Structures are given as structure tokens and as C-alpha cells.
Amino acid sequence: MTQSLKDALNSIISSSDTKELYKQADIMSAALTKHGEPHALGVMEFGQSLAVEIESHFPGTFTQEELDFSIPAACYGHDIGRSHAPDIVNGKQKDRHEIWGSRIFKRLMSSAGIPVINQAPVCYAIVNHRANGVLGRNACDPKETKDPRHDMKRRTLAITVLADKCVGDAERVRFREALWIRTLRLLGISRWYFNKRATEDNKNDFANFAIKSAEIMVDPNDNGNDRRYRGAIVLKLAMDPKVCTIEQIFTVDWFEDAYHCCGK
Image 1 (cartoon, rainbow, N blue to C red):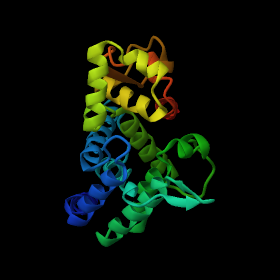
Image 2: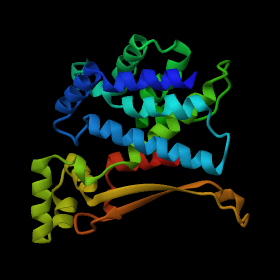
Image 3: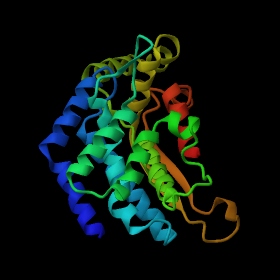
């Protein structure tokens, strides 16, 4: 069963339609960090690796469907909605890429012949992967529901959030912004500029540029000394503190919300 889902997902990823959508997503996000297919593939790889590591320490955490399909599909498709123009709400542009992403990826899954029951966890994760889903709608929280697959939706969302929020790195900063940050760093005033002159969008670029690599590790805590921390997920960052410090990163609205989502 899961092999057919894997094959269908691979056909979606390799299709020219999907690649064009992610090309448009990156164009529409030109004022932000890169949001093209390389980011989608990076998040998918990150999410799959994390799920496999958790499963190796705690067998039975995930179903085979989650490991083979729903997690990689949601991680890959989470930003495809950025290909759609912002909606106009009360006369102002509003980014609702999570809503459009769910709709677009549902269309792609339907075209690939994926049953609706298998689509649901993927769409749930995509539509809730932003802070307004995790923190605003409490989508990661358990709740009483008649849906027997709700926990699968929550697990798929959780891995998607962790992979998306923890994968930030210097390579996603666009050329012009990266050149400017390098210049400030060379002059020794990057951290000063961050505090005194940078806008919120600038700070997001500084934070991403400072993160040279990110790795997630799962601590099985098998010694039994303190079971509260069994299975703790640890984010390990390789950073350039001359760009900005970890303390500064935590002042950036996006990163503050992102890490709050990860904690939840």
C-alpha cells in the first residue's frame, strides 16, 4: 500500500507542473529568503531523517504510511502555496500561503490518484504549519474527535514544523542581501547594525545568514536517570557569531514564533 503512495509522491515531485509551481513560489517570495524547490527538498530530507531517528529509538511512534508518504509529502509541499499571489483582505495584501498550499497540493495528490483518506494528514500539516496554526489554532494539541486518524495528522504536522523551522541556513539568503551582510561583517559592525538599523526583514536575513548548518538529534536518555527528558529533540546550530548572536536571533519575531512552535 505505502509503495503506491511513495510512487505517487515521486511522480508529483518530478512533474513539470510541480517544478513550475515552486519556481513561481520563489519568484513570489523574492523579498524573502529563497523558497524554491531546493528548500522544499531540504525540508523533506530533514523531516524524513528526524522521523526515522525517532522511530529507531521509539519503535511504533509512526505508521509506515507516515514514514513513507504523509511526512515527506507535507514537508515537500509546505511552501508550494507561495506560488499563489497574496489574497486581498480588507483592502490589504495578506500572505495565506498555507491555505493555498493545502489546496494546490490536494489538487496534485488527486491528479496522482492518491485516495482522499491519505491526503488528509498532508493537507492538515500544510494548512497548519505556520505559527497561526500551531500557536493560534493549537493544531498540534490532542483533542476529542471522531477522526481516528487525528493523531497521524498531529504527528505529520509536528515533524513538518520541526523540519521547516529548524532548517534555516545561509544558503537561503539572496545574493544582494548576503553581499551586504558580508560587507558589514567584514567591517565588524554587523551585530551593531542588527540592533540599531535593521528592519524585521533584515534581521531575518541576518539570522539565516549566521546559521551555517542545522542538525537535529534525538536523545533517547536510556540511563533512566530522569525520564522527563526521554526523547528530547535537540537542535544543534553551527553559527557565525560575527554576523549576529543566538541571543539576537531570539529577538527576531519569525524565529521567536518558530522556536515556540518547535517547543510545542
